[in-house]
Image (cartoon, rainbow, N blue to C red; front, side, top):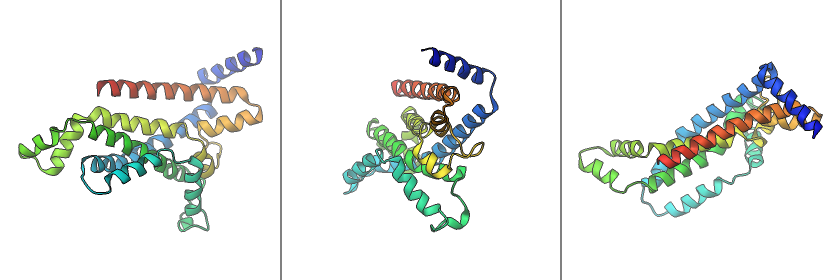
Length: 229
């Protein structure tokens, strides 16, 4: 108990004194997570809307496939992306491996199914009269969809927040594609794993405290949006 108390005291000291390495790691995590979520939203939200509002023969199978992708192992994503962007891969000439860009690519792939599924559920749970009413009043197909999204904006925002929560706590892809390079690709999760294994428990605890705070606010925002929906 004394060890934990002492480590917690040291960890709080690192946070309150704004230790440069701690906040550099936090900034890297947030930077990569925000970009990953943004890119995943640009792909996942339209995909969820198209599947949710469309009527086609393979809709059920596609929905099932999308649900399966939500449980996609992070190490598998890391392995596939690694093979593509490594020197021997088709995109090896661009030197993406062990860079923040590689981490963004991997985490975007992880977040797309989550955002698409949440958006799909939001669209399917919306009032069925919204789209037909908009079309009846003279709106075009695109305007009708935008009106549907506007009416269900809290559900769509919840989808984005859920995607962010997925990537901010991710470790497998970050480690495999980023390489955990200090001051460059080291995120909170990879730093916690490494520093704890080195015996730097206080440093890992400081990052863990910040990560828990981020996760708390993300989940609180998600719950608020779901209730408003």
